[in-house]
Length: 243
Image (cartoon, helix red, strand yellow):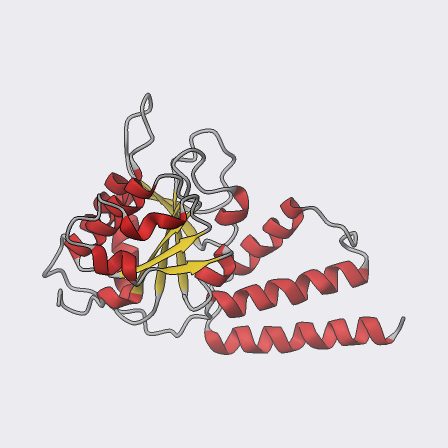
């Protein structure tokens, strides 16, 4: 299907969705384009699996996976992409227009799990949510009306990913570190920074988010991630053994 593109490698992650009808519309868009791996993080309405708007996509909702945190929802993914307008926020990530972002995602989807994150209809992705992303993608809507309905946004993004049905896809040969491994590195690095006095024991979420973003900007492959994790664990052990 679609050359080397593997639809099963994409996880569409909806975070704190407020309206079950929007969740149903997103599931319908996923089914339209052949992407069936839906994940939800703390939806406001637990009865979303019966959303009437999921015409023809009841199976997507039925098998949707629920998570308590973004970290858990993207743990098995080697690439995490956030969708945002970033109109009134300071930007800490690379931001690509939809067409360029979709092209980058296609290459990764040929060989590894990818998460595509959509935030709450009211607030979008939080800074904490964004800190789990490798980079961001935006739909070029007009300045005076930037926000789209959740179901529409999901449909537009998925369409852009599949629209070049016969385009050549160059799969990324590197086995990138999973989000779970990157989060473990982040946690151990934060321990080292606290134990060394670089960060206070009660460092703010902002400081933690900066460290998380830094680790993701390194674009570590699986082998380098394992090596770095071992180094950091040894540093933490040494710091604590001297106390």
